[in-house]
Image 1 (spheres, rainbow, N blue to C red):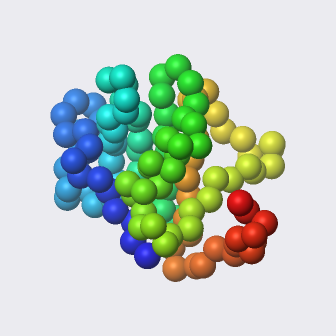
Image 2: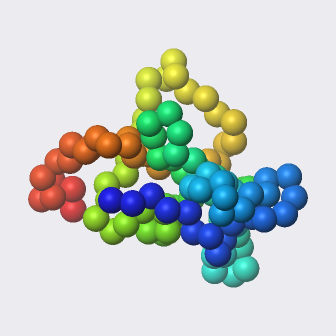
Length: 116
């Protein structure tokens, strides 16, 4: 079970610049078909691994979120997308989705027959 930043996509110049010394925290520009870039920001503080994913003009699709999961976590890792109580909503970007995994705690999962 490993959380890892995809270094080849790390933004290394400008306002959001970081380098490998930042560990899993940073901003990433992930190439997509038709010359588009998907933007991701990651971190692993306060007991959580987290990646936010966005495009400037639309929300990421399920397939795009799967690509992000594959880039930042291993195939056998489980990550989740939360739908918190409305009173906890924070919307800093209208087209941003998030993937989360608690550190050191296994996530419960329904039987696979119920998921597919």
